[in-house]
Image (tube, rainbow, N blue to C red; front, side, top):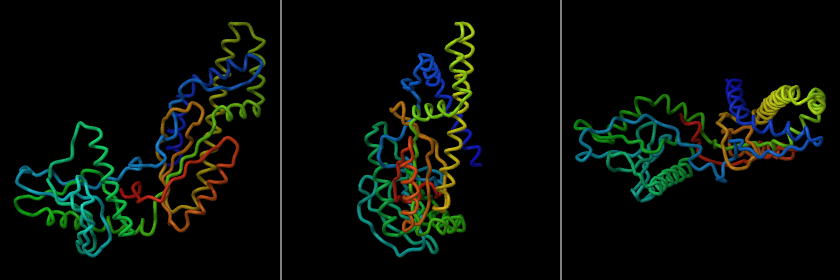
Length: 326
């Protein structure tokens, strides 16, 4: 599974690299191997210093919308918890709704009472405000309950002619009780941490060129060849540099993954992110679940990677276990 994810990530990463490698070859033919990546790489670290809802809340099943929403109510669900005493958090919900923790035998639910109408707006600022409120409620519930399963934005449990929204919620939770209890057990006393590792692409290409005799030899031949022959050799050189860069990225990913793995309970490999910098390229993007008390061990490993020549690390957390609730 990991191998397939790595292969796909590297394929996308290096597909965007083709113009850069061509530029590198051209620069090499001017007798000085200087690598300046000036084309768009399409891969970049997140501009946001925090994972925000980037580590998005994981979806829970949503009951069908009531046929007569104007006459009925619903419970908006923020999170599922272990069995807890009923608790009122106050008007901290979306649009200042009163948020409560309701106990349902072996499980609890963090909810607000409202309309079964889904939250929808063409105003981006309004939607962002809703998402922020949703996340803030999850953070508050996590601090209070210690163990929760965050639920996706706009999850509504509607009432019907036969049962109230609370009765529908109880039935729904009961139907998946074993699954949710198992998930809650797996995240108990643990937090999510985001790990993004970047490499400096010009430095990596330079290093590969200096270490690879075949690339050096082919570069020399390109300089001495005629225009027609030189074109074919440049194509071959470009392909070779790309291949070696791919191999190095694969090796680094595996090495770093094995360094991180012993210090976490669970890892999820996320897609790398795009951005503005043409040289700082995201090599891996991980969501890590681990006990908060042990996070310093992971931090020490990442600090060692940070000190490696050509690499940098972005480490965030602790967060509620968004990526591990599905």
